Amino acid sequence: MAMTRDDLIRDIRAAAGETVCAIVLYGSAAGADYHAAGSDQNILVLIEDAGLSTLAQLAPTVRRWVGVGNPPPLLMTRAEWKRRADVFAMEYSDMLERHRVLFGTFPTEGIQVSRADLRRQLESEAMGKLLRFRRGAMSAGGDLQRLRSLVEDAFPTMQALLRGLLHLHGESALGATEEVVTRAAALAGFRPEPILTVLAHRRGTT
Image 1 (cartoon, rainbow, N blue to C red):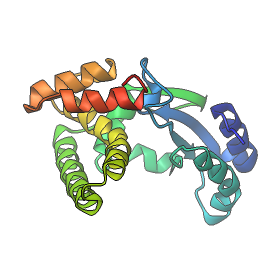
Image 2 (image 1 turned 45 degrees about the horizontal axis):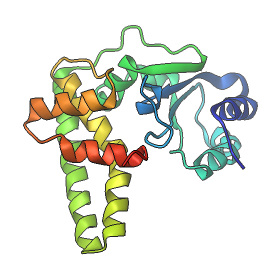
Image 3 (image 1 turned 30 degrees about the horizontal axis):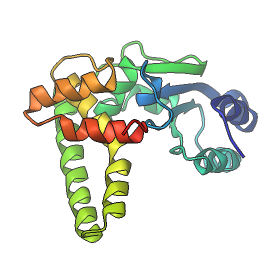
């Protein structure tokens, strides 16, 4: 059974009640060039209490949301959100620049991301993803279907890394995905064509 964002908002509010502070769409799906076939719907839920009883109440809603192909919502307390920009520098820089408030009030005032924290996380994430990708490619061997699935699954993370690269250089990542890929390639010195080919494939245009 299909589940829309409106269904998700309604069910989260019904399950968690007045403890829900904000529900925010972020990442590629919050961009102007969103394509349903090419972007995950990343949802941040800010809540006053994230205890076990609250998690249990939210579990059926999250299972339905994940069951239709979405990643599970990122659940944080409001207090955690206000003091974790150093740990999640990439995510924060992305959310602060590109987001859509679906419910409540999103507290962004006074939250800043340091360039040193962003560089450190970007390097760690990029290297970690590269090593996992190599492991997957070795396991897939010459199986083209498995290789194709590996590349498709890695693409949302690649998009986030490229936006993080632009933020590291003090640039906006609000442009169309093609623009982000092309600019990141110029900054980092790689060919953009392979990534653009995967993007076109995910959108069903090639």
